[in-house]
Length: 339
Image (cartoon, rainbow, N blue to C red; front, side, top):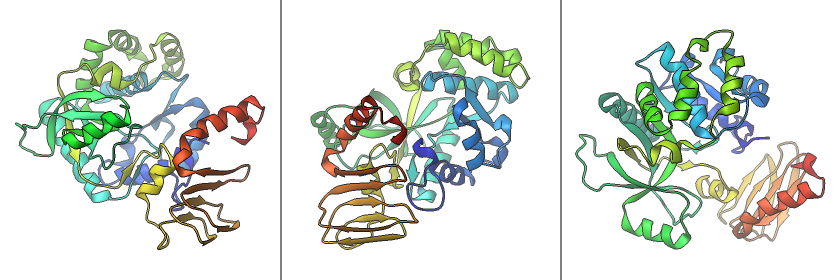
């Protein structure tokens, strides 16, 4: 199950539902759009029942982030040439909503006033090699001190390099959230990814018609697979960053990242998610147990314990990168139904 459809925080809402709720003060419900794979159409409707079918844009195949953003941009531009897009992953957590909203609103205002491409940066708290980094110019000519011109993007540096970035004070984490006018991103696509621009411009007559799905199948079959970061953001000259303050952000790429963000449930810095979890003589561990299950855990130090209906994971937190190998081994052993 993709993590955006999971209630990882034990809050009674999935991550995609929390994303929807997060943007409610900023965007009216009729202006929400979800871009996802065809296979997730029904579960998306279940989690976001207020969305009409036309608000769920279904990709016929996976082509990374540039094509799916281009699809949404050209479709929305046809409906409203003055429209502004805020692109956000559906599987992040934001714990401080008002601070986050201030950053998004600053980005929207800047994108409208300048026509620039805007990305949202996160002030780094540690030299993490799992994130991309944005270097920004120290001098700001912007009226809003939160906004700076982007100098460089660096994708997942070594730990040593990430430490240097952190010490310099010139780098923020790349959140993967973007803000721009649809006209601005279309211009950037035409300049830097002309093949993709041509593909989605070619189906202009099909947007918002019964022919859209069939035409999209043909376009995606020939469309280049490339990320928006590599394809546009690293090449464009008119890219600015909102220097986001601490709003309790995590992309939940690891269980450790969730552990870092979420409130600890006891004095020994454990995180216990579940209604019936009893913890003894343990510290700095994260445990997620189904609500209808009782768990008693004793004697763990810096561990991950994740229990689901079909599988149980117990792993040292510092060795979390091995989970990918565990998954690969299980698939090789024919245990794909458990993962």
